[in-house]
Length: 98
Image (cartoon, rainbow, N blue to C red; front, side, top):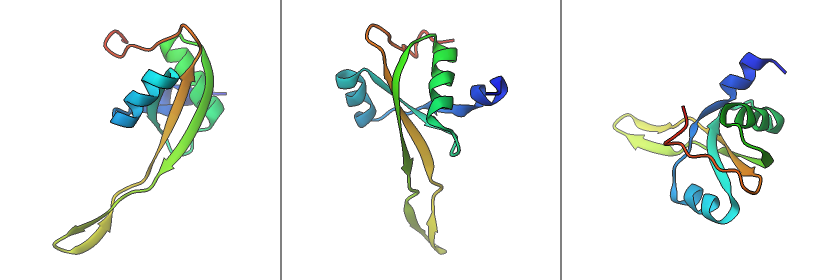
C-alpha cells in the first residue's frame, strides 16, 4: 500500500457519547475516515500514526441528514466512521498525540 494514501485515510477523531462509551467498555477509538477507505488501510494508518496495536476495525457509513431551510429541503453530506478496537494494554491519548 502507498504510504501517502495511508496517511490521508484518517480525517479526525469522532467525539460523541457513543464513542466515549465504546472507549470505556470496549477499548475502542472512533475516527472519521475518507469514504473509500478499507479496513486494512484504517488499521495500518492507526498503527503507523499512534504506534499502537490494533485488534480489529469496524466501519459504518453515516447517512447525511435531511434539513429544511428557506429554499426547501437539502441533504447534508454523508460520511464514514471507523470503530478501531485496540489491543489490551494499548491506548490513544489525543491530548498527548503530536
